[in-house]
Length: 163
Image 1 (cartoon, rainbow, N blue to C red):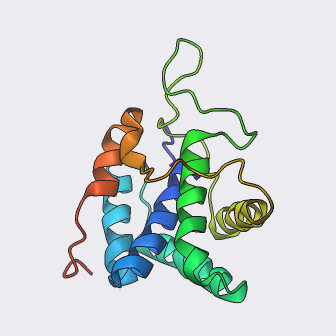
Image 2: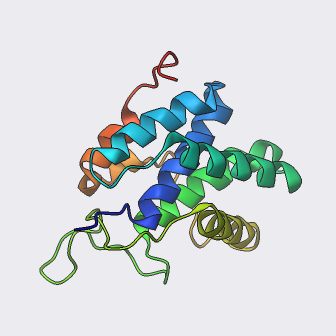
């Protein structure tokens, strides 16, 4: 049975890799390795190259639009939007009889560089015109307790020697 990572989880982890790289100047391949290892414990294998490529493209896009100091705000807002809302803008349900667990693996692979980057770009362009999906001040994924193991992955220290 297939157990692919949900696209919103993959995209959020790629964006967090990007954020970490920009904020802490940590080697991108070390951050990607952290997420690759953590995600692969719960889903079919995800390579650090997959995460690095998406993160690199996110950085290029932010540079193209001259995001400057707004880059971290765009990334954080993207992560917030992906975690808290579904693609249809409905609040994501982590509990409930009919909702299922959104962290559960999927039967087919629904993520790739092109799709994740398309959603990231659309989110950034959206953010430039509206504040609708901006996170509350000082928001972090750790505040979404239902993320369970994914929170631990976001909070895990990056081992710069793990390349």
